[in-house]
Image 1 (tube, rainbow over the protein chains, first blue to last red):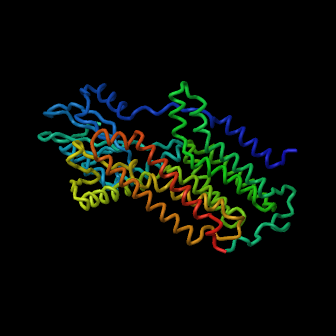
Image 2 (image 1 turned 90 degrees about the vertical axis):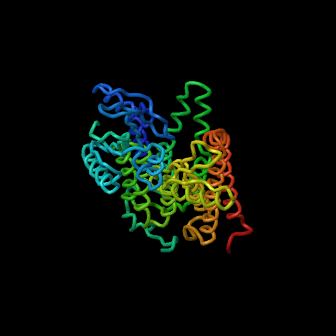
Image 3 (image 1 turned 45 degrees about the vertical axis):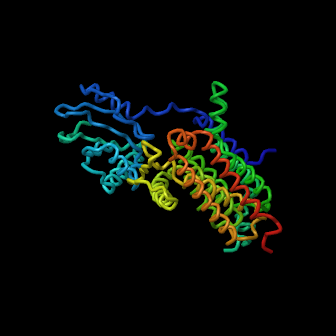
Length: 151
Length: 291
């Protein structure tokens, strides 16, 4: 005879299967591709980045009055918030840095402000049952071109 | 609190319940359910592989260590004393697992959350304390949500590599985590995925889990000072292995590919497994065990 606790566990397992424990979700769309498509729809010209930075995704976007395309690189929040990656990225990319995260734009990587924003978004996401962690977008504006809000 | 303390083994403690749950039975069923949750994603990868190449890739992604750990954990719970558990604790634990699975739309985080709360719930039940600790270690070993730690360790790794290169007379230029050397035109950047902690977590926690489940019953504290010594030694070996791997990756594009994605990366994984299993075998050698 199956013990009572075993029956309850079997019921839980059935619930797991019904709720889709063996369901393979489609991978989320590449945020860089989504962003590039949005900018293209707004009339910007999107091109390949000057160089592909390691495991990150990115692209170059032409902006009016800028002599060269603006380089956009997307990073995982925790990766770029670490102490060693931003100096490396800046050394490779050059130009003026602009940071965009969850709809807000910063003129530097203000870790405290970014963490506050992430915490607030996380709390709101939990309340609405949808927890997302968007990437941090680094924009490198070429010399002779003032950064503006394009995202 | 000594492990032997009988907290919940008297009829009064279990409330003279009509629904007593023997401890080994509780562990067998609940851990069975958790094992399904843990392995579901991996099983899916294997079962749904459309071709042999994908199947091969899926199989190479499966680490041997967690397989051994789960196997040994089920062996361990068979040795638990046949005491009844309070129904509130047994059914409450099951309800927690179901609630977390239902409400958290991310299996790995759900498993991490469940393991953490179960660990806290079972802390005051001597017979379950060690099972909870092992479960928490298994969840932590997956490295879910550990990127902040890896990012910090990668920064230390880059500095250690810089120091090592100076020490052996091959100085490099370091900008943050970017290492520029004459042999590597693009330089080497130490991302979170390349941090030593990616090796330290599975090796250190793996050894701790194996030591916990191979100790006899619950007559000792969780881990002895000698056990901690072995864990510290394996962690040091993990750091050394990763620094050597990073050094080899600096040798040019081909070397980078070999040690980052290729056979070299597999060699490092196997070496990590050998170190863990070797340390465990020596540490649990009956001739070396303390009286």
